[in-house]
Length: 389
Image (cartoon, rainbow, N blue to C red):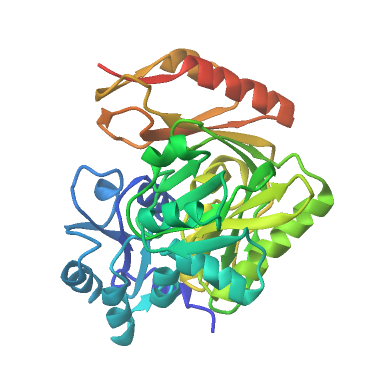
């Protein structure tokens, strides 16, 4: 049954969000268009979203008691980060609170080992992998000839924004091994790294945004440059969207699912990993799509009709990272020169302190042609630096 919009916009209707970072901020800005108040739980009142909600509760979203107390008076709960206490969310669900994404699926996704096993069980294409108890078991597998260099090691839990991933090319990289429970993946011969943001509501309606192409910062392992539409064939575009839709159907999630994909040099599409929330690979939709990913997430978790996912124009998104060698109070160098570039939309997250490779904001550059957008995006990367005063 479709959610009654009158109920949603009633002053007593409460939507809670675990996490008040930049994703929460952009979610609150989207909700403000409907005058839909959001309520946030996070550790500090100076976080990006804290001042934009109807209320802010200080607490730890990884702690059972904090999450339970926060959620008891909410009609709907959602997340801006996976690493939350899913046991408390399950209890809230038992008490009648709607939780999206569902706690059991959230628990599965935040464990990258369980996530890979899920793809195997559901027949969804992904790279070969194996689970290991710790880094010593990894060394033993290499010594026994079960695994050969190079390979990718991922921590099973707590990985985020490039953390928890290490590429091991030889024994010289043993110092890069991550401690604790992990998985190994074979190194895929990658042509392009792609992503599709897909949404679903309780009625089972599904809609996918156009596929994007991503380039990563080689040091921080963060998305640094994103191109929409991806420079791929119509056949690959259709296949990527179809795979993303299969994935969200398999999870039966409501809200958004960001599906990161590898396009191999043989033309195969493989699922790398997913995130059940708004995602870095969808930030450009604020400025270039008929419906932003943040509004679409709200539509999904509130069981409203999903919005139009088409792009209005080509777009490039650049992550604005703290400059190397700079730690301290934030200073935006080259701001005026950057704003003089046509089609530039700056989004700063309000973080008062910068450090190397910290996500401080993003820029979306729109233009009539993709080539023009790419060229102006390169200028943004050259001119804008986030430094410490």
